[in-house]
Image (cartoon, rainbow, N blue to C red):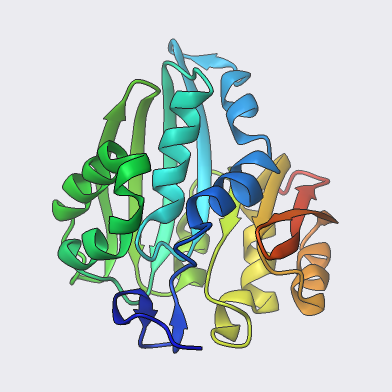
Length: 238
């Protein structure tokens, strides 16, 4: 497959995403299938705010965060505080992020600008946890970007997440991001009734999620991807 240079993650020999359906894919597979907008709208008020925690494996160029901002606005969400915990082992520059996301500027330009402005304030060259706030009509997203290995990020979380977006590169390209040890840790950092979504339906990924405590089902995919996976946490962890 001939991948344009701007879309190629040279560490894995894989593209960050398909520019044709990438935003729609994110909205359908991760946000729509897990009913994230509805769940944010229905979240109980804490100090007058709707607090919702998201975890993500594979920040990449921030495509899912762009899709989430657009979905929250389109869904009429107001007064939300989204704690967005994500991880990236091989961070890119803000300039490259802009090049990668350029194909979506006609549909999501102002969300891309907000993301890049926030990302530019992060010292992505330094390992560890970094924070930045992104404000919008929906409320605020507290970006918590961990530069390093995914397991370290997951284990460092003080509170469980309501939704996990598992969006690393394909299992054959980056098997570590789908290993059983990491999926088990994600299960322990998921609240009861919380979700985990992923584009891959690989058998070992589904079995790893089930072993981590998720009830796993195949759900509609997007574009050429007919099926995706939705996991729902059955029990709370101590």
